[in-house]
Length: 287
Image (cartoon, one colour):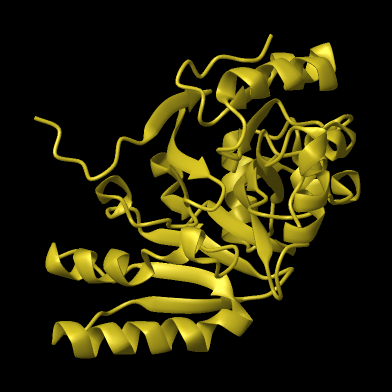
């Protein structure tokens, strides 16, 4: 019997599993278990508790409400303390909330709270790091790109036999160069941004991007909340090098069927072929 606390949507993109739920104003939590990251935490569904890193974009309650439970339940289950990356201006409020819950619960809530500003990097695994960038939503809000670090033999050493390469390495000569492979970018909530000028974002294999509002009557609502309207979305993502685009943070005010119909009118054929809606249970590209 499935005892999970949430019925999260689950699908795969190029062997990377994505699980999550994202409805504007209700809850946003998107996890990629193989990368050991959870983008925002929502209400901390059971399925994301084992993931060691929460990458928090901003402090709005639909994105951050479950932080204390996430840390506390890991402790209860005997797991090591979780790590929460959060905008630097949120570190003290988060610690205050955790302290209050410790008093309510009567137990310590261990966790690593790491303040992040745009440009900061954090190592997730030996070959995996995340790099933060500024977004246009709330004070200090950030998005994250998860990057795989690979090594490639420098061109001047091409053609050398294995023993010779080993000899060079023993002498302390660096024979490899590091290559960054942006795997996934998570924008979180934001107004329209110039993503073409952001190489990590523009070249990520997977782009998880907000598009909250879809009908003309909601243009002012999008502007007031510093969210993206579909009229801006196409302009923002067309021309990027992403192989896959996942649309998150859709409004409940517009049904999934209508959202898909509008997107098919607003986006190019090329973009539609690589775009899925997180909350579409079919999880199929729009074309």
